[in-house]
Amino acid sequence: MSATPLYAALVGNPNCGKTALFNRLTGSHQKVANYAGVTVERKEGRFQTPSARPVRLLDLPGTYSLAATSPDENVTREICLGLHRSESVPELLICVVDATNLRLHLRFALEVRQLGRPMVIVVNMMDEAARRGLSIDLPGLSAALGVPVIPCISVQRGGTAALLKCLDAPPLTPPAGPPNAADLHAEVRGLLARYVQTSPTARVLLADRLDRAFLHPVIGPAILLVVLFVMFQTVFSWAQPVMDLMQDGMTGFGGLVGHGLPQGVLRSLIVDAIIAGAGTVAVYLPQILILFLWILALEESGYLPRAAFLLDRIMASAGLSGRSFIPLLSSFACAIPGIMATRTIQNPRDRLVTILIAPLMTCSARLPVYTLLIGAFVPHRRVLGLFNLQGLVLFGLYAFAIVSGLILARVMTRGVTAEEHPLLMELPLYRRPVLRNLALGLWQRATMFLSRVGTIIVTLNVLLWALSSFPGPPPGATGAAIDYSLAGRIGHWMMPLFAPIGFNWQICVSLIPGLAAREVAVSALATVYALGASDDDAAARLTPLLSAHWSLATALSLLAWYVFAPQCLSTLAVIRRETGSLKIAFGTAAYLFALAYAASLLTYQVARLLGGA
Image (cartoon, rainbow, N blue to C red):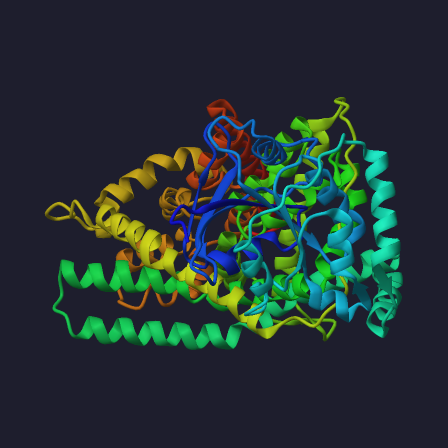
């Protein structure tokens, strides 16, 4: 067998399982970069067939047609046609189609077939098709198309065996033909009539009955609101016992380490900066995992695409198309992947507006800040005997951010007409979430969060500790030592700007490292108060310290600030990369800062008038 690798490319519609197939084939032998001159992700991997034939595999961006309407689709079109300036023409096109949605996916496969290049059609999700009562005559379909048609289950071990065997054979070149959309649709209808038989199962009929409720124009949004409401209730109710145990453990560990070290700089560094700073953020991991458990479960169950369908009309009222929903939804985890997901939006205006409001969606990095302030100033009590008041406040903060983003989108698009691109979304059958997938998703989220705690957060805390510890107070000084440090001086210098919105100098100091990562603001407060307090457990008692030293108006002002707070530097860098404009990145930071300041000023002054001071 030749040592020269077969150069193949995966193509297909979005949501056909192409990426799952790529991961199954290549495993860890992958490298990810961007195509030269365009911010579109390039994924390449390598593997061997059973006969040891090496294969170099390129995973092309998903597209519904070779008539490109977005940067992602244009890359796929150029490579398939051999027009890309930095990518050679693949020797084999592996077109992946979803067995449960052949009416849509076969049309694209026929379009690829018309290119006249060697290709294989991989019919993925064959297990799901069987559960839906679909019977597909793959040999007949292969004979009709003149290309190999291979069954595949990319999520199962051994589910790619037929494809691997096929790759050992010489690729076939199908006959090329003139592209004609009408002919393609007619050909798809004929192929489905001849080679696909359907017998609806009880599962399909159940899905239809559920959709009558979940997609109802009145009942559907009400159900969605209840789901979101319960989700935020559980973030506080389920997580609190675990958080208390973790807090007690970190406090005990810090005390144990502190008692074993002599008083001095080293003890302060380890106890105040590293243990207290990292521990103060790490205890919020249970809440973050509960939030993502809900998101993963809703996605696995098939409900999340239906939520997107329900919210499509709301997106239109904000002047955006339904395509903006998925990037904004992704931004609730982190604004960075949300902004990158806007590449699928064809209209340049819609894409830019979506990028500008994506930072307003409440990312998970805000959750530790929200939780700290809510826990310190909102009593833990029931409302109407059913609802957790702290959960109600958290739900209100998320809702306020969403509404604010939609209002801003409406303002940005006011008076500007744009071509309408309706949302096309496949609604999968309802299914029971797979525990393995949920566990894997939560494990990935936990490791990402803890890696940030162990790297970015600890590093920034050590830097803040150094700024807060040096220089020491002069001889005869009577105030707290931290007042004479660089951090104390910086905080006091910032006070004239932030005093009108109720911030003290400790909050001002915490805002600076918070520019690198939102959640660092919590550990920064812990570090500052630990160094400025007279006892060693100050960081462990951060919540009661804040409730004792801050007014309610200050706490509400800081909550309002973090609804609109200027994004972390990583997000601004991604905005710069995606838009190609430093001006837009600075403009985003400026408008978010202005909104945050205005919201905090209004909140603080109104709260003072109402007795919150």
